[in-house]
Length: 129
Image (cartoon, rainbow, N blue to C red; front, side, top):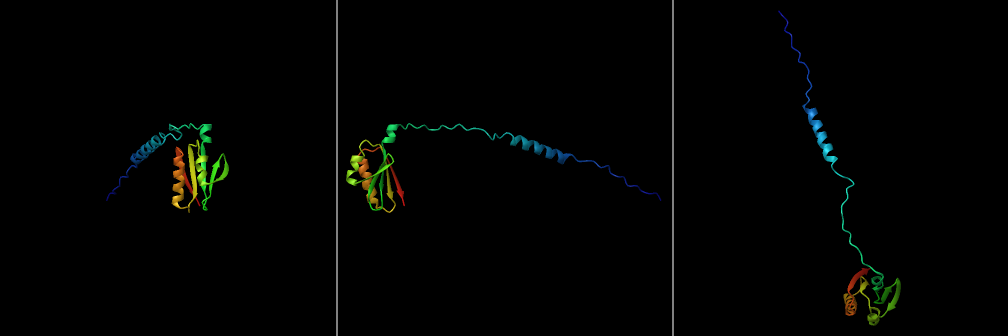
């Protein structure tokens, strides 16, 4: 009897997965290098036309929890009466009203009405605790 010899298969290397990986790496580097990390965005920044005159024409009216009125002008605080508010607002263009959060709404509305009667252009309202 003769011996039957098995043919040994010659080992071959399949390059298909290697080529797939190379293409994936190529695509990854192509995509990741197109992003510009330090790119700039053009933004139109608004300009201010604040002059010394407009800074002087701004005051703050503060009303505390006991309904006492104060005017803050030029970083100085002056106590006033609500009846004299019109005298202090002559020539003022911008007013900020700051009141205690526990004040009655009617007190704030009376102050807003008196300020608007003086022809103030800009009015802001703030509350504090």
